[in-house]
Structures are given as structure tokens and as C-alpha cells.
Image 1 (tube, rainbow, N blue to C red):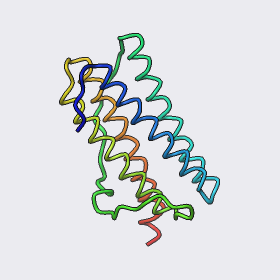
Image 2 (image 1 turned 45 degrees about the vertical axis):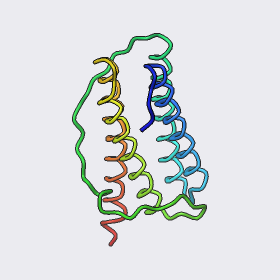
Image 3 (image 1 turned 120 degrees about the vertical axis):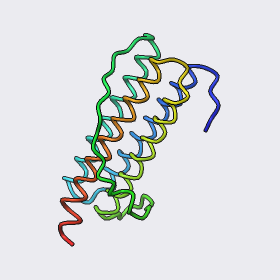
Length: 151
């Protein structure tokens, strides 16, 4: 993992990570073949924009308030093969890719929380990890309902 020289480096990294997620979900939405699929991915892009805005506000103002909650993990993504983003991606593959991405984001924020220089940043990164965990759960539920039940 990258070496950070201070809080601003950490926040810059997290902000860029959120922008990458916005770009990813926007691209998935653009390549979606159904309106429903497009709407799901655009909603996730919107949520990631919210995360980015919260991080920018924290960086600018230096203060924040968060709450940490436990999120259930269905662990579906633990058993799926990694896929790449393609123009004609199936809904199943898009869900798998999204789950894997959210799991990676969760692990990233968890690792950042362990390296945070103070309790406030530690709590911030734990809260962001829980947000990513919620996203993963939503994709796992969607996968369970629309892929596993059809097979």
C-alpha cells in the first residue's frame, strides 16, 4: 500500500478511490443493456459521488460526524470468478464485477483505518468500509434474487 505523508495524502487517496468508483459505475451504466440495470449502476455512481463529497468536506473543514454499524455479509462474492468490464457484459457478470469491486474497496478502507494517525480518521475509514460493505450486500442480494434463483 502507498506510503502517506499525512492526513491530506490519505484523504486525497480516498477521494481518488471514490472518483474511480464513480467512473466505474458510470461506465457500467453506459454499457447496460436494460433500463433497470442502468438505473442500479447510476444509483451506485451517485452514492460514490456522495462519499467523495463527504471526504472533500472533511478535508476542507477538518471536522466530521460518522456512525459505524455492522453490515451482514452473505459472502457470495467469495465464491465467484473475477470478471472484466466488457461492452456486452451480462447482468450476472456485471453484478460479480461490482461485488468484487465493493469487497476490494471495503478491504482498502479497513486497511486505511488501521494506518490512520488518529481516532477520528480511523472512525472515518471504518464508516467508509461499512458503506462499501452495504453496497456489496446489495449486489449480493440482487445476485441471489436474479441469478441464483434462476439456476
